[in-house]
Image 1 (tube, helix red, strand yellow):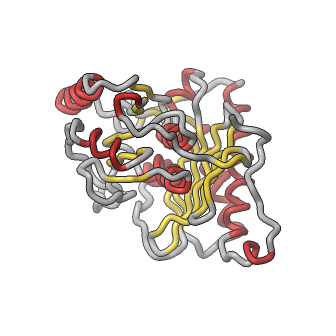
Image 2 (spheres, helix red, strand yellow):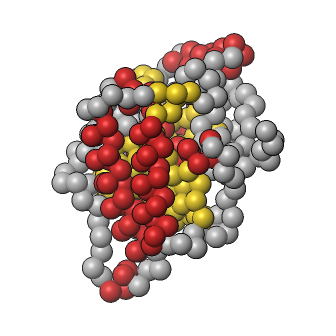
Length: 296
């Protein structure tokens, strides 16, 4: 269970010397601000447009919240780089360099947001030298602030997170999503994979509609694994830190190393569950987030 809505901010002089403490504190603060903006927007009319398909939605709230987050962070850290979902959609590059980089999804779960389905998250990750340093996921309709810092643990509203103690996949809850690509080939592979996993058998398949929240559910021990093909770096970067710091693991769906730009990922409680799950996943091709973009 999550307690009060406050992420841990250390007063220890050694920890305060951490060069990224100020960045972390600012991320928590702006995630709170963004979450309040989303809650207020739910009370008003929601205007929807589409991006890559009829189910790949964007609202004025997505764009406004991303602007709030990036403006706030740029005012404090003007030399840092930014990868934001809506910025990339409007033509900005999606390239992770050695420069300190913020990876942002302002409204993870836009379809949920449009329908009033109560899982919507603000996801903010921070990387240096291409390594993820911390992640902040604010599930704003639940009022749960998930945080993770490399080597410092993962927390929900200040309470330490730990992955499930289940090691038997037959006793596991597995999370996945359908994505936004509705091509026959990909839909068939997604549902074929789900059928094979159900027949392992497992206790159940679930999905919250937001990858960031799904990863936090693994980190909190509510589920044993989450996998998806077709997600983006801004969906999973913050959650990746939280899962690792809660004792979980991250892999590619092939079983290889996790790559935040690859658009495919398994996060799991342990290696045994991940390995068994990977045997059933039907992989289909997706273009990397950092692939060269065609000029329009």
